[in-house]
Every structure is written in C-alpha cells, then in structure tokens.
Image 1 (cartoon, rainbow, N blue to C red):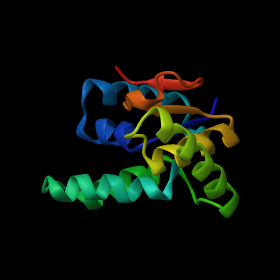
Image 2 (cartoon, helix red, strand yellow):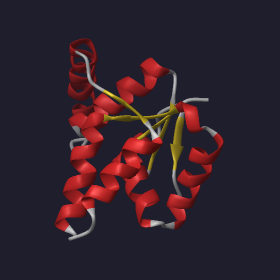
Image 3 (cartoon, rainbow, N blue to C red):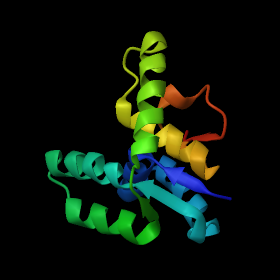
Length: 128
C-alpha cells in the first residue's frame, strides 16, 4: 500500500509523539511505498527553525524515509482548481493541502495527516 505523508505527520514522527508512533508503524510496514512532496520540507524546516530545533535532522529524516516527489504543472493546475472549490466551503483550506491531496489521488495513496481539513476525504489516515 502507498502512503503520502504530509507535514503534520512528519512533525509528529520526528518529535516522537503518540501520533508519531502511528507514523512509525506505517513506515515500518511500508518502507518502499512512503512518499513526500518537496513542498513538505519547507513547512517542516520552517517549524523546526522557529522552535529552535534541529531542522537539518528533520530534513534528513524525511529524505531518508520517503521517496520525494516534485509538483508538475498538471498537478499544480488540478490543485488550483480544487483549492478554488474548497475555499468556498472551508476558508482556511490551504493551497499546499490541495496539492497534497491531488498527488495522493494520482498515486492512489493514503494520505497520512493530523489535519482535520481532510477528515471527510476518502483514503485518509487521520492520526489521533
């Protein structure tokens, strides 16, 4: 099974929270099918830098535990359309969230997240 981890999932894993333990189990069982977007690095590094934590370690953990994907123009277009529609319903739905969701669908992957924006979406592992 394929999994796409978002920033919130990686952060929980890196800090070793109980939600991070759920991520650990997914990583342990599905090593070859773990994906991340390059955009995730920006979010995670920013968070760790702001909190004066080791952002280089966070970067290495994500790099070494997932296949990193880039966003194509086609994915960006589809995500832009999704984002425009979602903003009508949820004012705080982010553009990166839309990109992540489109990529997860294209990969036929489960999205692993703590983000409640995704609770109504199919194929989501919402960390508790």
